[in-house]
Figure 1 (tube, rainbow, N blue to C red):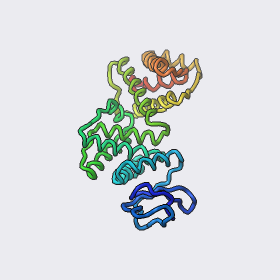
Figure 2 (cartoon, rainbow, N blue to C red):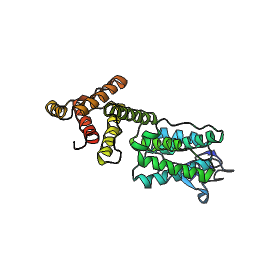
Figure 3 (cartoon, rainbow, N blue to C red):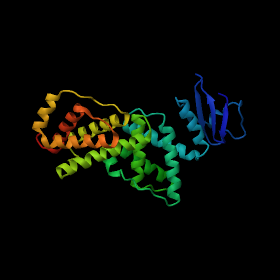
Length: 278
């Protein structure tokens, strides 16, 4: 391979044997080199191929502004997440996570620790991603000596949630706030906390994730079987009232019409979680 572009002493742009653009990293990889020179293969430590021109451009901008060590550390975290979560992750994680990690390390060194108002909800809604966030905090401490607070694990977790569902990180925040609001309504109606240790709770959280995703993307189930909804309304009036309040909330806050099917499914899930024997 030959060097197409030198980004800094440690990073170059090249093309692989298939003609795909690649970002190559290694300490001193580009020192004294210029475009057209052969790549010193023995110095290449990391190789990235991003499948979006926009992501590739953002990645190139990022590598010139943050330390190489932060990229290496972030890739270690990403590799752990892939094994731990067992899911495909968007290329975007190679841009968003190093950017976040590097900025957070600098913030902490300056004594700036940001509270995470969604931390409790992230632990409940995204437990696997939260554990990845906690491991990321351990890796950061090991490699930099900077001790992230648990709040930071929550912020990191949302990057991995976003890398699975696609879209923008602000969408994930919107989704989490919507789920938070739904549980707030459930607690207000029933005057108690749902039992987070049950399978029905897990199913409800999963449903809320997809419900929140539909709200953010503007997709809904529509209106289905009104007769079945009447049966459920009669059998679980409290759960129905709770579901209707959730739907009213998203209508007011997001101008999203949930439809009868959504009301039906929410009612059933709430009844199973909050009304034993439902």
